[in-house]
Amino acid sequence: MSTSWLILGCGDSGLAAARLLAFEGRRGWTASETAPLAGRRKALEDVGFPWRKDVPEEVAGGVVVSPGFAIDHPWVVQLRQRGVDPVPEFELGAARLRGRQVAVTGSLGKTSMVMLAERLLSEAGRVVRISGNIGIPVCEVALEAPQADVHVLELSSFQLEAARAYRPDVGICLNVVPNHLDRHGSMERYAGAKARLFQFQTPEDAAVIPDAFPVAVPTAARRIDAHEVAVPRLEGTPFAAGPLRENLRCLLAGLENVGLPGEDGIERVVRAFRFPPHRMTRLEVPGAGIVIDDSKSTCLSATRAALESLPGTVHLIVGGLDKGEDFTALNELFRHREVRLYLTGASAEAMRHAWRDVATVCEIHADLGGCVKAAWARRDCVEPLLFSPGCASFDQYPDYKARGTHFQRLVAERAADEPLTEPPRRKRHEQSESS
Image 1: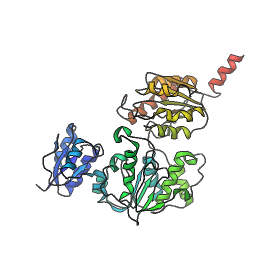
Image 2: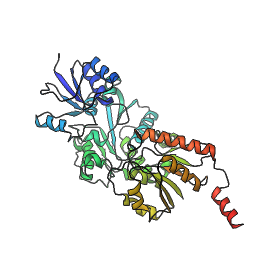
Image 3: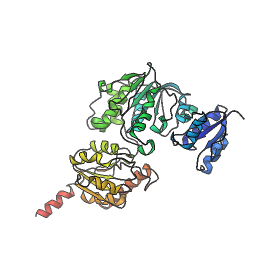
Image 4: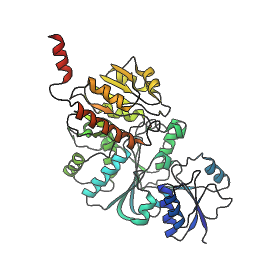
């Protein structure tokens, strides 16, 4: 057997790393604390990386770490104490990509901006591949389609915290706001992980770094000021104002270095863009009025951004498993907006305590169905119903996708049973009460 490698993690990233290393003639093990399902276990065995439930005493080759393993995981600490520095799966794959690399990170909007980058670069005639946190392991692309004009990588703090020497041609950080503090422990460590995107760049590279970065960002890269980049007006789209417009500005600032279509092409692509599922997705449900599924919102900053993109009175459903954030951070926003809050999940009581004096309506319901029902009783067809939980889903759902799918089903059922029609029901009630 060739020099053995160790891969920490048996998920999609771990399997992709195993397949890539096997293609290069390497063998070894995968390790995780829980056994993979039978099909995944066989797939790993078939490529020469059988599963084990511990770390071997000796690792003759390298160690690859999946993003599910934090840098302070006991196994990672143990390996480093033995002088072995694991390489993250994305960096293993990125070293084998051929073509320029644009890496995008940020707390809010990474996936959407990576998808938009693919469309903009394709419009400009570039051959583009996307990978990373978007759901396609970088090692998978390195194995199946390594050649492209531009590779666009979505990189999370979970991936970047373990970066050893990754150097993108263009690094873009969209924003940094509190998120994943349950894993990183502090805002400084979280922001520090994001900053590693730029740490190993050289003067030949470009970096787009937000002004309000919580920690110092040392880099030798050429810094690009996104504020100097012209952005189409884009009236009538989510990119007309607010955080999404700033994300677009950062993206365009970075992509100018690898090729963009003309102004008309940019506007055409952006206007035609559709967000991925459960990210500010406007539901097309007859009889439901304006309903937006933003189940991907798992932190308060995402909820803030979603709310700021909508005018007028908003019926907001929030709650789930919180990440240790300070709920009062939204108090000032609620004081100056007509927001009606419907709370559910493990964080509901703490949210109600923080917001009961600043929101027009602030009430707890046993589940998501109760929230939808209560909001429906107060809504008219022009008042948006926004589902932007601001919390993780794991108290009630396996993931944000299942949560968002359930929300969409509840809305469809409610609209079928009690469709909203013109004129607004609330105004009809007021008229009947006054007569």
